[in-house]
Image 1 (tube, rainbow, N blue to C red):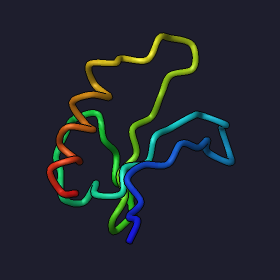
Image 2: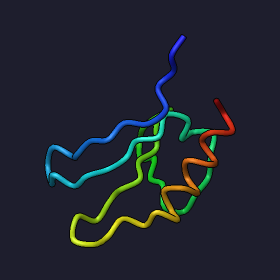
Image 3: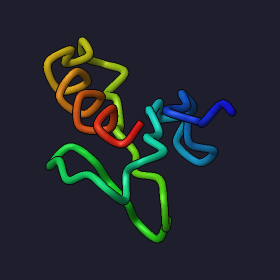
Length: 67
């Protein structure tokens, strides 16, 4: 069985890119935003700056503990 880990996308209103973490409700990181979602948390990416690989690795490492 394959489980969803993360999804890349962009918001409809602002076209801001994000990485959606499927196990987001089980992890805590200051860069993640949950909003009114039950399971997923979003890691927003500023398209005008370089992506913080350190932050992405931290979030992915936390999420991998649940897979």
